[in-house]
Structure formats: C-alpha cells, structure tokens
Image (cartoon, rainbow, N blue to C red; front, top):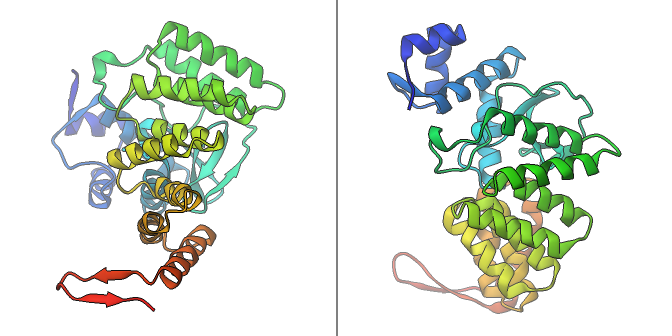
Length: 302
C-alpha cells in the first residue's frame, strides 16, 4: 500500500505547513509523518473546501454533524463534500444535504464535486477499492439523480455497476433509495439487505433497512435493524430517533424514553430535538418512572 511522507504530501498538494497543522489541531486529520492514499484524498478534499473560503470551524462542524446523522465514520471519504452558500453540504441520495440544519436542496450544476471522491466501504484497503472507472460511474449516477427526468439513467448505471461489482454497498443503497421513493418497498428492501451483506459494518445500510421495514409496518424487524446501526455507531442520532418512534408505536414507552433522551443529547437544538424532548417529558409524566441514580438512591418522578 502506498505511503506518502509529510514532505511529499505538502509538495503534492501545494500545502503550507501551517494549514496542515491547523487541520491536525482541528481533528480533521490525524497527526502523522506518513499518510495513506485515503488520507491524501482526504487532505485534497480539505484543501479544495478551504479554497472556496469555507472555514475550518465550519468544516469540523459539518463533518461532526454528518457522522451523527448518517452513521458514516469518515464523511470526507465516504461522501462528496461541496460548498453550499457559506456552509458545507454533502451529496446524498441525489440531493445536497446540510447535516447541521437537516435541510436538503437540489443542485442542478453538473460539474465535478469539490475534491477527489473515493467510493469505498469501510474495512476495504487500497487493493480492494473499485476501479477509477467504477468510481466515475457511481458519481455520474449520483449527479444524474439531481437532474429532472434523468432518474431512469441513474438507475441503469447503478444496476450496471452492481453487475460489475456485486459488493458495491453505496450503489446498492442509492438504488434502494430510488426504489423507496418510488414506493417500491420490496425492491428497496432487497437493495438495502444487499448493502448490509456486502458491508456488515455499514451503519447507514442498516438504518435505511430499518426505514423501509418500518414503512411496511414490520416494526419488530425494523427495531432489529436500527439497533444494529446503533451497535455500529452509538452516536447515530437519527437511528435513536426512529427507534424511539418504533417503540412508541409498539406501546413500549420506557424503551422509547432511552432513545428520546439519547437523541436530545446528540442533537440538542432544533425542531426534532424539541419533539424528542417533549416526548421524553410526556413519558416521564405519565409513567411515574422510578430512576436509580449513580449513588444508589431511587427518585420517583411525579
């Protein structure tokens, strides 16, 4: 596997030392004297984002938020970051997603996204990555999703890509989401299950599987999928939220309470957090729950 020394990285990317140090201090890249190809890609993305006058603070905030709402370990490698106004957005499911505000917007510009995108599954090393041609196919399909009346072309590309690379989890997820939006829930479920089998550590695949099972009123199965996503990424805020909703519908408020509370801790502001906080208060008020503190005392909630 190729490794690049610190001096090579600075030379290849034309980076000033102070910029690399700033990213290290911000936690966007690990401090090291040698870098892998993936880390080189990550640094290039950071360089290109900063060149669009996006602050390091904004990048850090967006990366942290994307990890929480998507289940991705490293969004800079697992998604495509672009400038959207004064913030960072991410290409996801044919739209631009701002994970901080939870807003989605269409982007009709078909130029290449900021940075060099590497489509990979967690756990893959460089020798297992799909070819550059396949990466370009994937990105072309993502861009076509954003163009009115060209969704059928995107589907065809995803299907071709999955024929060439049956284990391409990201393509399976995106195709599954297209089918989900078309209300082809059986087709979406098949794609999401394929993604979980291709990459058993891909939290987003289990989260999406939970969503389509929930849509089909198969709550027990949905809960298993959501819990699997949380086992992989305990800080997955949206999985806590959807799991709480599922437990509420099964009339299990005490189980729901834990996940409402977890969600408010991970996402303390905004309308979704307000709803989760209200649900938690309602359960506490109606259930008269006994809570045991760390010091062994029992408190009764009136």
